[in-house]
Image (cartoon, rainbow, N blue to C red; front, side):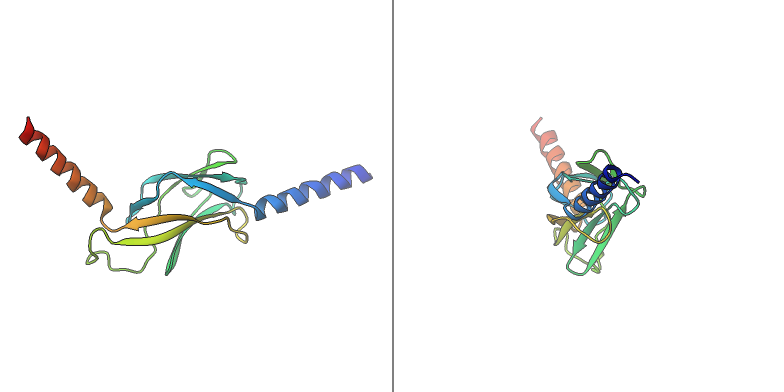
Length: 147
């Protein structure tokens, strides 16, 4: 192998190591979501490397949920990932939890499963979808009364 080919190989290897270790997140499309998950979200950051180890994690104080590449996580580009919000991993009995209860979480991304990005704040809200639908029904009721 000639010396320039070896140097090129070393540089590529070094840049891949730096890319996996230096994932930076900038923004989430949503800052809160229902505890049951299911809402489509996206995260903006850099660099996201396509591969089997690429995953997005949602961590709460008592658990974590993950979305893996080709299992819900879609790499739109090297700076944007789309994923369905996983259900809250917090071991709470949501059937008796008060609607509106907030569970703090952090969203992180990893390219290799060992090095994780900075965390972005996220909140799960118990019964958020039912709270929102009640607000819409209330608004509709007011509009019907007003008209």
